[in-house]
Image 1 (tube, rainbow, N blue to C red):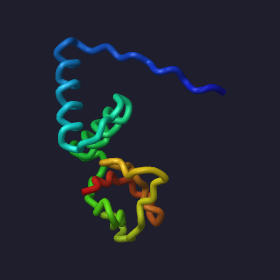
Image 2 (tube, rainbow, N blue to C red):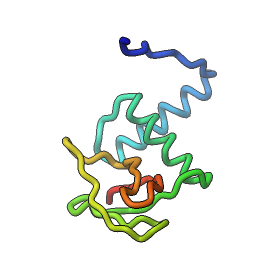
Image 3 (cartoon, rainbow, N blue to C red):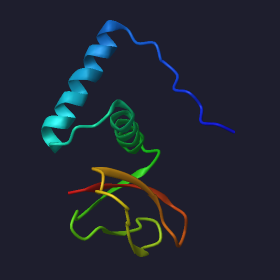
Length: 103
């Protein structure tokens, strides 16, 4: 089965303007150029954490180890490439889903 094609979503001009401003602010603050897919994924993840559907924790970018807020298990976040600003991970011990913001 092949990959699904991207689907357009309808935005009002005001919504588009707000998203462009948010993406520009994100890029200015992080120094990172993000494509729309990556940016929207990060924004959606942070939004879920803010409204309480996921927990968000911080980790040192140079030593990406996190402690699960549910069970206390400490584990390393491993990535093949450069660490993203925010990662969605699952605790290997209890399967709790958390968002990790790398500082």
